[in-house]
Image (tube, rainbow over all chains, first blue to last red; front, side):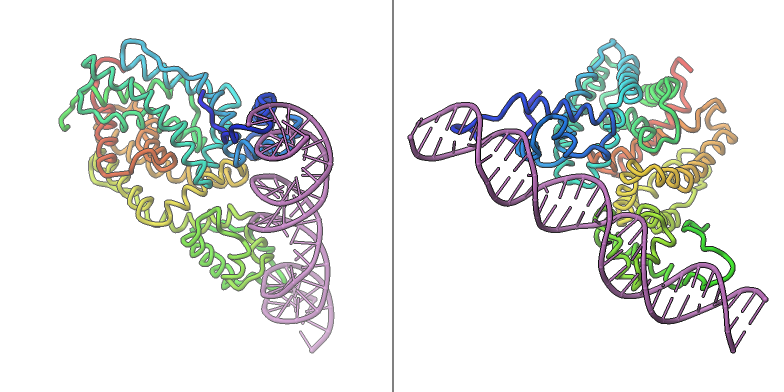
Amino acid sequence: MTEMSTPPKIGRGRPRSERSQLAILHATTQLLEERGFAELTMEEVAARASVSKATIYRRWPTKGTLVFEAFAFDFLSRQSLPDTGSLRGDLLASLRSWIRVVKGTVTGRTLVGLIAEVQRDPELAELWSERFVLPVRAQHRLMISRAIERGEIPSTVDADVAMDLLYGPAYHRLLQSHAVLSDRFAQSVVDTIINGLTCDSKSR
Amino acid sequence: MTEMSTPPKIGRGRPRSERSQLAILHATTQLLEERGFAELTMEEVAARASVSKATIYRRWPTKGTLVFEAFAFDFLSRQSLPDTGSLRGDLLASLRSWIRVVKGTVTGRTLVGLIAEVQRDPELAELWSERFVLPVRAQHRLMISRAIERGEIPSTVDADVAMDLLYGPAYHRLLQSHAVLSDRFAQSVVDTIINGLTCDSKSR
DNA sequence: GATTTACGGTACTGAACGTATCGTATCATA
DNA sequence: TATGATACGATACGTTCAGTACCGTAAATC
């Protein structure tokens, strides 16, 4: 995991405490589980980590960036790129894994809070895009390109659209809560996409 | 348009000013265009509408509900259910209409701000669901059921999944900004869905 | 030992939502 | 016409919380 917090001024002087760094991240994760993004306060993080607020702000410029770092490691460590040998298997495994984390852990709630925060903080939005959205999509893109190499789908398929067809509905249900993220849902989505990409009824 | 603000205590006493009601909504719409959701303040709305804050809070309990009402009328009046005679035509027209509003007017930015706010205010979330998500989905569902009646797609198609496949990718791009809401995107999404729902490669 | 940077503690600033109070205005009802 | 109920504008206030500023002290380099 690459560094995300503000780099220290190198050279002379007292070095930053690694211990504090970890204590802050740990306290943030804990409070995220107990309260969620909006109800987490920086004062509480400082108290829980036995650290002063200045020590936090020396490393992370805003609450959003701190929460993002605590979230990112946790979330990404639970997601791995499947390689089942078929596009259908890959898509289904990928979506199921996402649903499991989002529904089964508090990480899902944090994900929602971060997406909300990203909409009002442009600096966090840039971090979010560079360090989360784009890397994850680059991973997922492999599922598509491997399927093309295997000849499962034509090489003209737009990988970006394909990925949005897979994860768009999932994020939609996560954020709008109009329907449950069931396994039946995952299967239906994947089935329709596979059919849509492999079958040619008339056009295209 | 049904009433959304808190109902007045009926009977005796001075009635609520219809003029103030409209002035508040108008000022809200204006400020939403100038600043966006997060940067709009209730003080400013009151000043712009030549109204006291108490007059606003007598009608809308929170900033979110006020903005929602100002948004909902504006947005919904620009969306109508297409009836082109084919599922493909309906889906494409519907998605294109959404993209036009979201990209072409400030309403898209307000939509984003409201979705963010909905994630942190449970009361607004309920209003959002009842007065926006569910009604809009009920409309869209007609596109699917008409297609079933016409025999275009099997009656076993899960309408909820179908709608999420159409709008999920669009909302995904709106909120994550990883790719543009182009017309090519709209066409690809609709093509794949139509193929996926009409064609049977092997399973289902 | 001098300098530089980080530390905990704490007070502070600023923004904005939402509430409370007050004297006044406007309605229904008796 | 008088009375009571409610809405009104104005304004001050309470509250929460992110982020900053400053302190004396601790731990590193030169």
